[in-house]
Image (cartoon, rainbow, N blue to C red; front, side, top):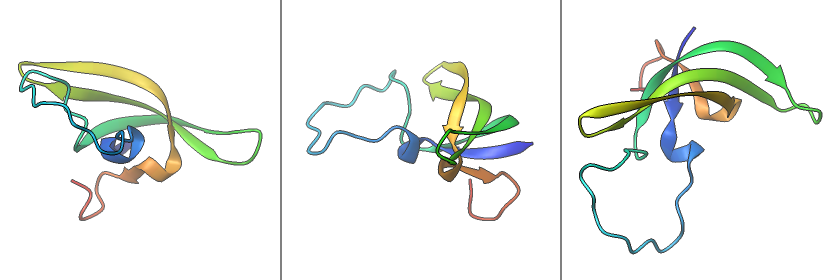
Length: 82
């Protein structure tokens, strides 16, 4: 199933960040498309989706597959998820 992964939510930022811009760096401040292949529940009842997606960077994409909290995922065909 196609999903939108909210990287801003998934990878929280350090408060009061004072770093400098690196145009070739990984781009975590966006939403990206992924493929959900499985749902799993934690021992305390939270839902996680096993998702493959790419983290963009200038001139390349880093593909990852891991368990993502359900609250960071939305169906890709839902308006406003891009």
